[in-house]
Length: 148
Image (cartoon, rainbow, N blue to C red; front, side):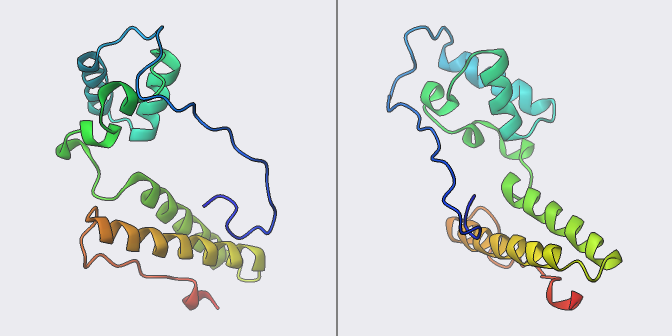
């Protein structure tokens, strides 16, 4: 979703090398990685932060490559938040933009930004409903229309 509305091409991103197994220099066993993930999640870290910590401090390139399953599957249900992390971040962004627009009603670029954020939220919500990550009756109430 990076350059969805910008009209610019942007620079191409790097791709990970295709490999099913961890690199030869890798020294952790899958059980150790699972234990590290559980320890970091009990400390209250988000899944993306856990991945960064494992990459930077422990030299674990990809949890899914080592453990054989994704990071979110390792974290127990009790430790997870009700909403996915990317959706929470977009909701936080939308509320921040809404608060800004309540004070600055003439800020048209931010009105446009709020509309784009809300469209991303709607697309993510429909995807997460489809895969069963959020309840079918969960609804995001847009506020962009009420600000005009």
